[in-house]
Image (cartoon, rainbow, N blue to C red; front, top):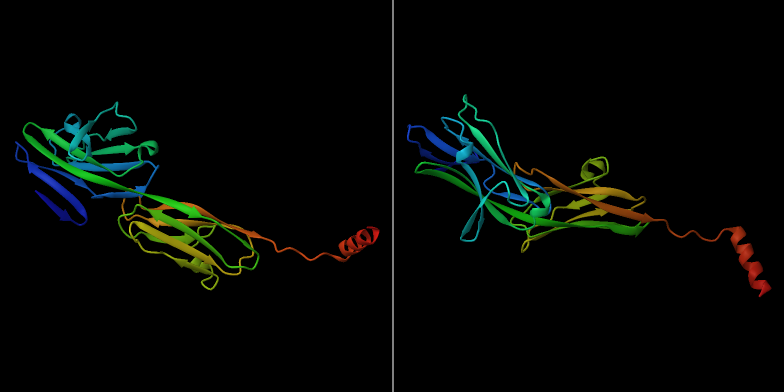
Length: 245
């Protein structure tokens, strides 16, 4: 059976000794950036002994399911020791950054005798492209983070170099727009009025999963000084050169 309890997905069966063996995951699916390490976690409960030999990971590709082993490229499997007090054991699949380049689906599974309990956890990846801004001193600058390949709206905030939300610094100077998911793309912008100095900002995304609560990327504002008018000495030199020609 399966049920939704306080945001935790539970799949279970009754074992041969009458105990209810269940598999749970706090994140029913994961949302994260491409090319970053991700950890997929499952917990087994109701166990009567160490069950490492019964725990397996699979990668689901369409109608095909491939078992993940210690020799599978780009992943590492970890299993905690059996806790006799809680009758629980946790299993984690670590997908390294170089391997995390496209949407995929993994399955954690407990199989013993004729009983099997499993859970599929899809990973949806997005790409963040920061756009810096270069303006002359005193002008308005617009910086942006363009998020592509997303499956839902993401909460986005903007912080200054000290980590403070720009809206709390000066709401009249900074205008942050979160943006909305339109066809898998969300553009969040930060407008800086009367820009006087170069500074770095952070665009922070909140995918809404416990495995990856936030993801941040740097966006740079470059302010160039306005050209100063020639001073008196420079004008005299220019005048002398003109008369010498």
